[in-house]
Length: 168
Image 1: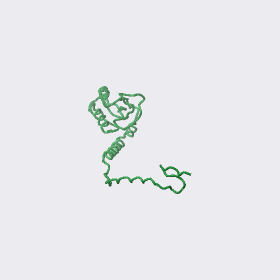
Image 2 (image 1 turned 45 degrees about the vertical axis):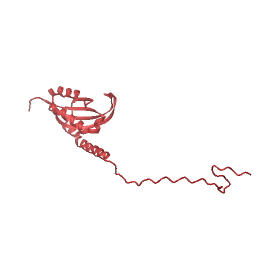
Image 3 (image 1 turned 90 degrees about the horizontal axis):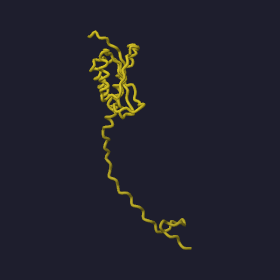
Image 4 (image 1 turned 135 degrees about the vertical axis):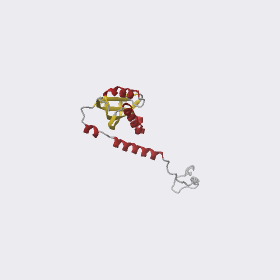
């Protein structure tokens, strides 16, 4: 291990709303960014899905992820550059989290909840993809023929349709 001082950082990452369709890909992208600079991931959670205050790259809604990581201060510039160059991320913001204790950071970990949500969304998409059961339907019978018009009076003093009233 190097003698370089490591700091704890809090990162907020904004993905387009389309990332909700494949949350695992968004998580994999973030962990790839962390690994590229040698960051140690302490905590990761999906924070929220919201309407954005203004449109960013054509997106009106976004998905936020919050992460706490341990990273050498000298690697921070490389990490921020990688986030800015990412085509999947809309925005990112990193701040030092020295004011938070380890228990608070670990309590914010939502990886288990996130894994459950990914599993649930996967099951839902599989259920939607399954074709509906084919039900055998008997051929439809021809519609009943319309009754022939009645030539005689109905007996109530009125006239049938298309018939002229009797002369008095």
